[in-house]
Image 1 (spheres, rainbow, N blue to C red):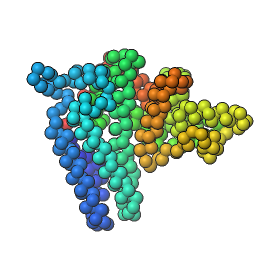
Image 2: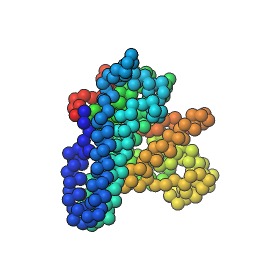
Image 3: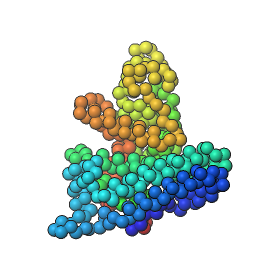
Image 4: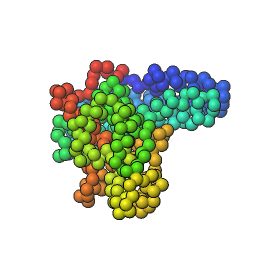
Length: 336
């Protein structure tokens, strides 16, 4: 098994950028080459480890996909010393590649001759960040012992293991692209707030998404937890802040708010920061902020969503596939 530094689109983009950068700024070009060399080293290390999909014999022990799933069920996914080294090296490779394309993004914005590549670099940059974030969503599902069925948790574990092995080759995952599509659409909208009903944001979000999203809303849209998680997602603030704003609006007799009045109302809370449409890291921070709040609610027994919108959507898609009798990651176009 081999892992390429770039897919076809990334390679073509990289070649164009380097060719032009060499003429514009030789020093920056040298920095680019150095970063690529480091990426190549990580790629070779990753490839030097055996596949986590193969059976490995260590004396009387056999390590297989099944034993790895058992370990994930028992220990969770955050205990790095309990996971195969290849998993951690692969994640490090993806982080390094994300930082490299973040560097190229800055280079494109710095030189007028490279600005025409801005959007292409942006899309690759987003894709790499979202590939890390989708792993976190799968991990949450796996670790919810007693909340989801063993069958669904195993399906999530199989998907995650394939992501680890192929580092987010979209041909081996059935569900991840739908969640990535959701994140990408969210980066393109900014909450208007207004009456705090979220109708406009939901319409704008839905206009950017596929039929899978409409099926999800049609079947799950009336569930209170889904509504609460969706409100967090479209407004960019957590449930507790939404409740505080609505209570303040009601007590003051205010019909609508803007971002400035919202910040004033949340003075005793963390001021909401707008999600920057050109920086996917804001989506990463936003997801984990909601996840931390969920954990606190569960511990305190407080009111509010117990899952993020991403988790709810991913579970919905997985359950649809399981109900149709389709199990395990797609192998129609296996990664090389």
